[in-house]
Length: 274
Image 1 (cartoon, rainbow, N blue to C red):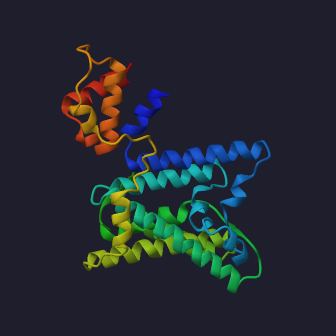
Image 2 (cartoon, one colour):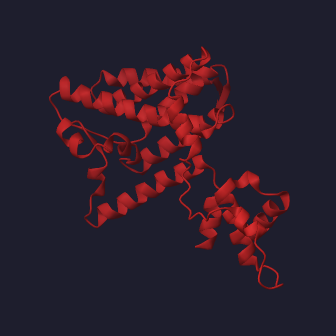
């Protein structure tokens, strides 16, 4: 358990987000096998009435995936797009783009089915958020090269490929809701990036919210590392290895991994190899 806590504290906010997506998929799958379909309370229904009782589904649907390949595909492309995104921007902006893509894709899906389509449907998957992140960075740095297998292409070409595929399949009627959500996510990403290129910040308040408090840090925090730094021990006995690790982990929880000294980082690295 202590090793898991150690690993969790060393992960970035984005890595934790990926881990949460995988964990949710595993939990939902296990509960489904034993006859507890929790996912029905998290997916987004095309019914406005259902939304009144499950308003959280406008976000939670993005944590539910249809199958393992659906999860792998989305996380693979999210990881790929985020590598380029995070070289220019912080994690707070990435989460902002992602969740706005998810939210507005859910809204458009909901109202499209409620107002124009007579059939009912459910929306699941993080594809809208993934598309928002991918198209954002493809719009902001369109000529950034990216290697796909043995080919070198530019980000704008990759983004255009996915958008064209979704447009073509949208007209086929296969997975209409999913394809619509992809395109809405792409539109959000394009709009936010194009406005930023003009010097206009979109959803600056949401970005500040992420920066200040929403960092996917679910470890138990103590008041401040300074309490341990300035407090004298009752005895002259040296700290045990476990006490040293606990003290360093508390410092990470309070101030982040970058606040550690070189000696503390080296100590954690050595202990993590055991």
